[in-house]
Image (cartoon, rainbow, N blue to C red):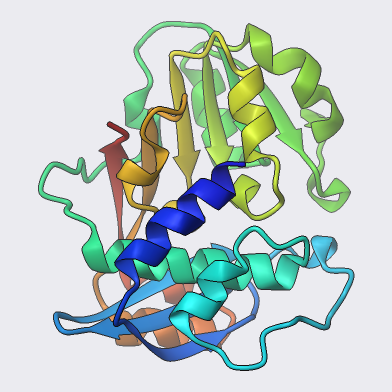
Length: 246
């Protein structure tokens, strides 16, 4: 599993890092870490519809303890683990070669079949406006609209896609391996959203081509937004970026 590989790589980089604060919350679960170069904040999308067991096995929170549970079957443990991995990633990431652009700018100016994993209406509308044939897949039925397919159809339809833009919450719900495996034709496979704060090296050798995430540039402002449960409050402390996966 990809999560197991990511977990092992993150543990190597987490040595000596201090857990400053954390929260399992809406809209994002977050972990704040500190090393000798300062603090870093990592997040992972919280998926309340996936939560079944509210009890977890973590009794003494730590950076390593959270990361160890990143591939847990318990979604609470998995979400905290991914947020911790993202915090460690953001501490170490080098964005000198990043593009400070929106994910839409990665797609070429021609038509084709594009899959959106997760219903992202503004992005879907923009892609259709540029002539792409867009297939939107969504697991949460509350987020469906008339243009949305159930995620049950991903297995059958992804092999025909020219590009895949997947919400990085597929790492949280455990579908990322299937998505990568089925999207054999896609020239672009982009993980997008705050949950995609991973180090690009963690995905080297997979079919993932880009990470389109957010760099926290104002930790205190972003953290206040998270504690208040605010998408906008969190995003006001961030800057969007895109990096290529080696």
